[in-house]
Image (tube, rainbow, N blue to C red; front, side, top):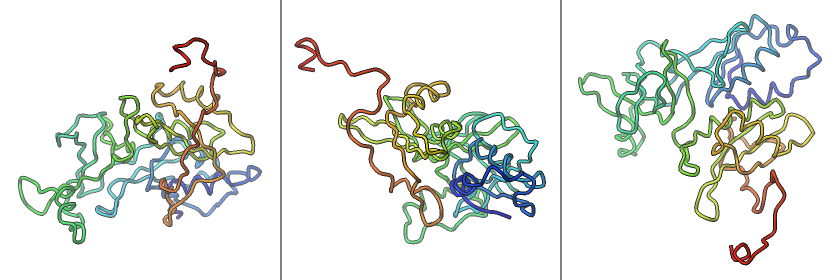
Length: 289
């Protein structure tokens, strides 16, 4: 059994040699257990490419305050129709709620904050009573059950399967539009030449946020930013296409193996690779502007 976070799985599998037959790779490995970060369809493709038919790929949703909440089992024959991979169905004793900003429950396929109604929750946060009250809510009918607001965003499919779309604090606004950074990352990871990717919002000099993508290429050849933009425009609206790309040899990781977003370098100032050449100002008004 191999258990890890998604970024570790991508790094490990992305460095496997291509000249070994799939059935000969880790023949005794039965379960790949991945969680801790959003799982992309490209992760499932890596599993199907490099591991034997006896192996099962398992995604899950779990937090320190709740332990594991859901499981989803993927075999070689499992079809993933969306870029997002489900995290599965709730385990017994846990009721999953999807709430809007007003705390109201949402319908099927509507994105909201994932909340857990259960009696199997952490007591609270040590010496932080205000944070405990804001995250652990009482249930109106009393009893031992409480509601925990996870800070994760997701939606429920018609069959009850939960899909995780990212952290609530990983949402941002670009030009007045709400952007889910995990959705941008999943679109980047679907590009074959990209091995790892992270999207962040950086405040610009004018006060508005701009979207920046940090990319680790799968080969030695440099990826033109122009080509990446063109590919992303086929999947994302224009406001979700990064304004700048930062190419790195590897992404910084925390001690637990997750991507350390705080350690990512700030994008360089100046112009990124443009789709058309710069035109110098020609008349007085343009010069002043």
